Image (cartoon, rainbow, N blue to C red; front, side):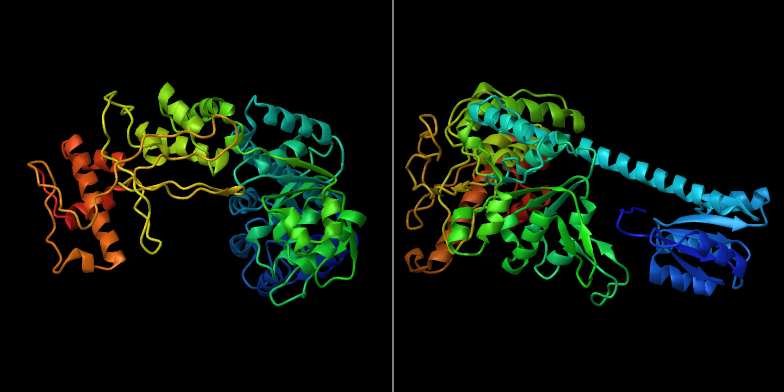
Length: 548
């Protein structure tokens, strides 16, 4: 049961005594309260469905079955409703049964209306405390996200200084940056250090809301505003009263709605969908985007006046490739966090692996790094790092042996079909706003995109795949069984068939090599290949692979 200062508290009084109902209506009047009355079980059920009360004052002895009989049904219909039982039959058995069925309190008749008011106040305070505990719990669970701002590089020092300077003001803030750089975390830090830090932090993902629903989500709606609006609903701005509203991906807000958003930011007031009453709000607005706002303004897809109102303060979050020196700190943070959460032993990475991770451009930024480290901890294998972002000619991190790897690298080809993750030919392609990194050609070095002298690292060239016209490699004693050749000359095959044949050869070689290394331990082989156990079994059956 939640409430705001704008909406009355909805009460349903269920009693067959008209004097009791009249007393309740006289004591709990608008605008603070809104009372509905029911005199029997059937009417009570209908009223509870239609009006969605926050508090039900329920008599035990009412026509149609009794209050204790419908109490479980009322709680099933609305688990958040608070039920106070009012009855002249206050024997211990009734009290215990009512509380066991879900009642919040039991008040004996005759009663003083002030006692009922105190009981309702205690219920609201208890519910508000529960909601606050739940909110704090959620914030604690999200503490790991603050690792995105871990770092001692100059860009991160400037970001933290910015947060400290603007947090104590009530000015609007626009946060820019690529996906995964920590825009959500920065917004929460600004709220945490603001004067309204005890108020709510309400996040709205504008890109996730359908265009026809975003107005009602932001500003709420009145009862009867549209089909299905059986009761009024507060919007996100109203829920953020006294705190902060965070509009993520603000560039996705439809152009016709931007004028109403501008009105809220300028005048701190709005009207619900289907309503006539002006509602005033006092909340700080923080917005974030990864879009090119200059281009949006030029194309007139975003209002210029709204941009200037929203951009009272602006900060650009650096990408992870622009602060590579922070990668070891982030690695240490996430390994400590998730080793404790997943009850796994802390395993420090080798210097070679850390160097590789510092050289990688991280197109997904800190979110991608966090995801990779979680997989590595769960699978307890540093090999996952090399399978995901590594090159082919490297020492094996787990065995310490040097030599060529069975995991080759070749470009993706063939009508958008990608080589499966963890198998030969898998290629990670990073796309950035400053440009696009294409697939390297066989035999050419891999170039990492970034800034500064350490941003480009040339890895040894990967062995290229055999041309489809060339003779297949001779079968060895440990090699895979070759599938029958398709009739006709391969040169007459279309490109798709050629690519599929190359993929089959590469998959067969990689799977056979992994099975040989693990002495046909299928689960361990699947982990090394980076595929599921069931996928490995399907491929073994598909290629008719058998242990020697």
